[in-house]
Length: 82
Image (cartoon, rainbow, N blue to C red; front, top):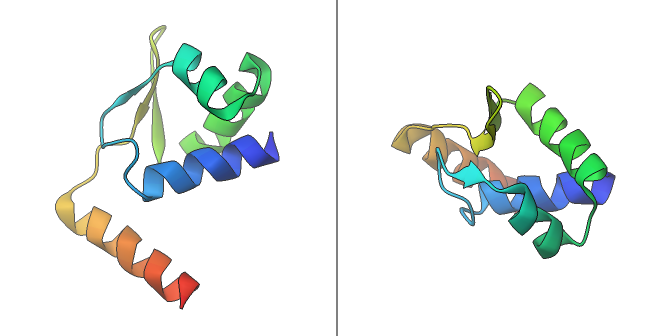
């Protein structure tokens, strides 16, 4: 689950998934090679970090972000990698 969390978080920060995009469990399980349980655990951690939102009875979405919030994330990532 830790790897799934890291992979998914990295993909959200890198823009693989766009703000407000629906995260389909079937695609996530095939992309990351994880079961539903570990993915739900990873998604719950990302909800706590406000990178993902829960849609009642409909699954998960990438949290909506403003352009400035996206730029802040990219800047933070660039600083961590430098």
